[in-house]
Image 1 (tube, chains in turn purple, cyan):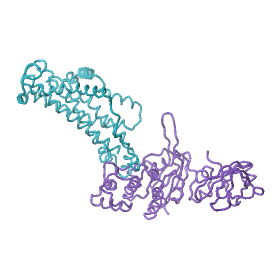
Image 2 (tube, helix red, strand yellow; image 1 turned 45 degrees about the vertical axis):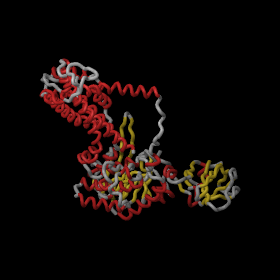
Image 3 (tube, chains in turn orange, purple; image 1 turned 30 degrees about the horizontal axis):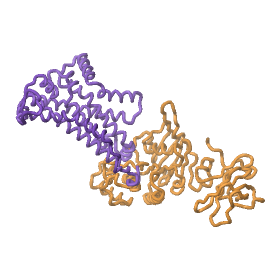
Length: 337
Length: 279
């Protein structure tokens, strides 16, 4: 499989009024052809800057960016074989939906009949066949999102960049668009580079995820690997919920200096015989499970997820024992910070 | 961007609290104070009396329109004024747009200073602009001509074009330009297909205002014109020697029409735009 996008030691430094910000700091990354790759991280972690450097809207301070082996790091956006779906969609308000979608073909000099036919079939692909004559203001948020997608895809890009494209949609629509995007990507076989701060979105859609923290790439892995074998405390805490322990007490209980256990990997047991015990401080209902917070003397607060319809729930203040399978305990290296 | 335009639309207050009677009366008094003189000018254009302003006019006639149209110097002055206004507006549109493009989104040393200096000519008393230009022409040994008037007018015409363009550019989402370039358009294509259409009505409104400003300008023109007589200057000269006064009023009626129409159009254009943007 060939490499679609390759970043080699890319940094981006912004200077603003006697402040220097390393938005992206020494990132190296290979994205394979046809891959659904997600850049995940909290706001300000550098994921969007990274995407903008691939698109050409921000130029890297150092390092090289290659798209299908071709060095593009200093090229303007219109000389790169990528297209972008913007966070605010950026539809041209003075053009009809059809003209918006046909724009990329129009500036390349494709004749009107051909480009309008292609644009119309692209609108069909995103299930908006009747909307061509309307203006962007007449469309709902979800519809605009689809138009932005069609407008990018009509150019048959080799790589599609998506900058938090679902961020402005409500939950139901967002979940629907997630599965639509995923099936569209499978159908077209185009490489997708997707930016989000939503870990659920990242885990459910991506082939691989790159987790960003403070301008650095902390870990690149598949969703299951990130969840089960995070390499740093930051990744462990950012993806899902994690109990991260450290220190001498941790070594005594688990046999490692730093260990991680997911809340659902812990079960309740008899307080007298369990390796860890404490009082239930809080208990919350989440629909598919109950989440209890147990205050232990040895390791502080431990989060435990209890299945619905399982054993009787403990009450607040009750002493409970905690147990787990030793094979699930994951060891961690200290975080970059 | 609101996803549901209905729920997020501003609530229209159907019953605004009524203004007090005193406020209503004083508002209408101010409107009357501003507009009765204009009405009188229009009335006197039809007056049968030709030496003094008598109210009410002894009789009404339309003969002054024929007299005014028959006087060659009126036509010459009108033509000069229109030509000056067109040139000044054209120069202002090019320079104002370029200045707006440079200042709308960028950050550089001295940006605020340039912004203030660009707007200054419209706040500055015309007499200062006039004196400054006159001494400038003198120092540079530029003889007075049609072009010295045009340059004088362009100084304040630039301001209205700049103001309109910069406001529109700041409202425009910067990702529109990025999206255009992302879709393969180079800088020139982006300017032609995205930026100029977005600026269009703002530029038109700015141009119309600039035309109106230039058309009735007296002070700067007085300082920068040589032998040329623009329409406002001609009117000033006519007032000094009271011959066929109603002819001056007829010309004034033309001036009112020629300046009011562009200003109303500009107002209507910018308002319609704001409506569609905030929708």
